[in-house]
Image (cartoon, rainbow, N blue to C red; front, top):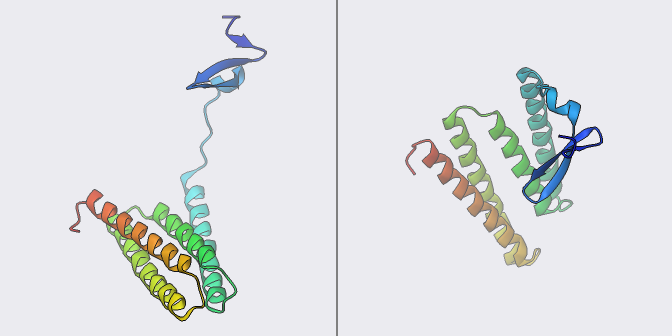
Length: 148
């Protein structure tokens, strides 16, 4: 047993990496925060992200924020909503909402490219995001036995 001990820790191999785990950490159970605190924090995060999306949308429409920043905030807000959604139909509805929003952004990006105020990369980024959202909607529907 002494050959396995390293100082006050145990040498643990995972895959190709080696990690030192203090010997007293092995015997202590992990402390889990109460579920209500986690849900409360998740709701707060979702609310903050929705505020961020609102602020970025206004700045984007005014030409003061990038499409990429708005898209990133939208994805984070959706993920926060999905983490709170336990009902399968609610998750599908959230995915549908995301598809509709991204269709609108894609159309706006197409128009901006068409009039020359933005480069083609903006429309391609919007199209890729829309395709991602459509794929996730189909996955969500198939996982929950809903018609596609």
